[in-house]
Amino acid sequence: MAAARRQFASRKDLFQTLRETVLDRLRHRLDADGRASLVCAGGSTPRMLYPKLSDAKIDWANVWVTVSDERLVPAHHDASNEKMVRLRLLQDRASEAQFVPLISTERHPRDAEQAVEAGLATMPQPFAVTLLGMGTDGHTASLFPGDPDLKRGLDPETEHNVKAVILKTPPADAPFPRITMTARALLNSDLVIVLIVGEDKRAVIDRAIAGEAVDEMPIRAILHQNRANVEVFWAP
Image 1: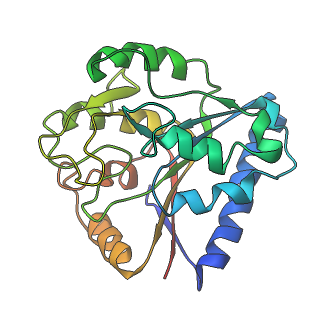
Image 2 (image 1 turned 180 degrees about the vertical axis):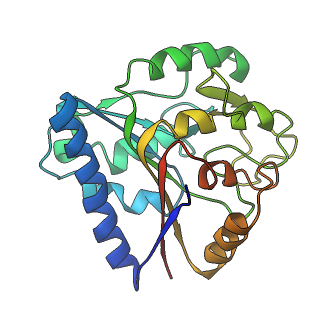
């Protein structure tokens, strides 16, 4: 199924609609199952959404929250997605939510995979909403082009929900080993939302939609599939 594209005149309009969309999906799962899960993206754009959710009147005590990927740094480190989510989302009413980290006490990222898998298994699934960003290189979560182990993260038949990421040339602004959810895990969701802003990102998403090679642009594994509903939210 093709990803739906939702374009907004302003970022204010985008975030208002995005807030209501996320809350509607959480409420639907809470009404149906009594529990719901939310997968949060890191990055500068998604982080603007989270304070807008934290005061929502929903049953946060029965909502589980995790992140799509994590840098293997202490939870108090400024590069930690967990720290960002705790500070931006898990406040006010949302402080009652259950947070499931994507890090463990293992020293090597590959040794951490099993522990992180066990943590994710405690979350209600399918997820109500998975939020993703996208880089100008077409990466999403920590599924990067050029990762020598990328195939394992994109394999739709894999049994794994997470994988270690050790890049030969990591991003200069975050040169850390990582843990990422696999494409299969990210797509185990009622709705996947790819959140992007600006003309540069619109050009990248246009190119991603037009092509097929997932190793060149891993976001294509999210956009071109038949497992989950995907919506691309964009504003200038």
